[in-house]
Image (cartoon, rainbow, N blue to C red; front, side, top):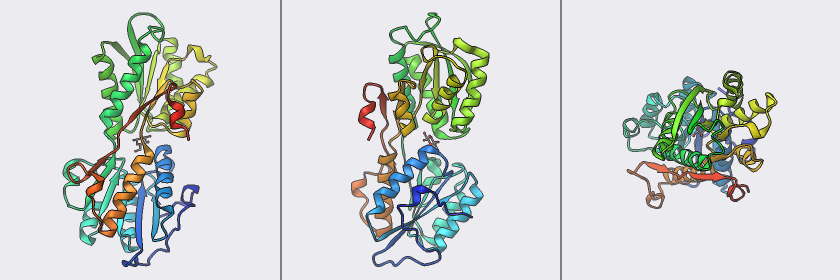
Length: 331
Ligand code: BGC
């Protein structure tokens, strides 16, 4: 089991393991991320660290589950043994939270799940379980609306047949954001009166390099037929851009390429007019909400001001980013 030693943790005072927290004034927060190489999660953790960094009474332990639920379950045990007062879990397998929940209950340690949403039934298995994330359907609708606007003038309809020929680059199989974003973005285009034709889709697991490989194959097979690429996240949209560049195709001939997240690289691609738009998945808002909730739970503070939905959920809104407003999102 390995604690992450990467740059994003450097701002933190990593506590020495095995020492129980001093309950009088110090609190210890444990965090386990599903994969520390995920761009969005990495950026979210930088914001999380920044939001607690000024407080000398808080120490944070961050673990990388490296895509193994078994590893994450062991990390949960270790964080409890280390005296963490509250634990934030980015589930590897959102359908397998049982072990984490059993340990939380047994040792009476509150858990804030984030980003990878467990089903409601699981969250309500114990009163000290919470979720911080966003509403996946909202991101799909906004992505569909951006696409609808971009196809309004008819220019993006390369073959002029009045039908949008599209490709979807999907996140992980079974991830709520992948399933719901894909469904809702296409439905939104249809609801807005567009005819659509799905040329192909591929699971690229949120990964830029996997998306590039899959997109390269689609460019070979379908070439100029492709009018729209819906990326379930920015990294995969960027992978599609990489594929067009590697194929030596001029930007004017690219399809409309859209992402979700508003990562640093995603925003830059919009500014460069390579990606036409994205849906802001407010990593800072989610990180701050998670820190506020974790601190309140660890200190026995009031949750009233956090406006929890159903007493358990914090969902931070998404918003739309295109060339018109991208500067507002760049620091
Ligand atoms: C983000 C993806 C990220 C995934 C990880 C999604 O909400 O949009 O970029 O890879 O969460 O769980």
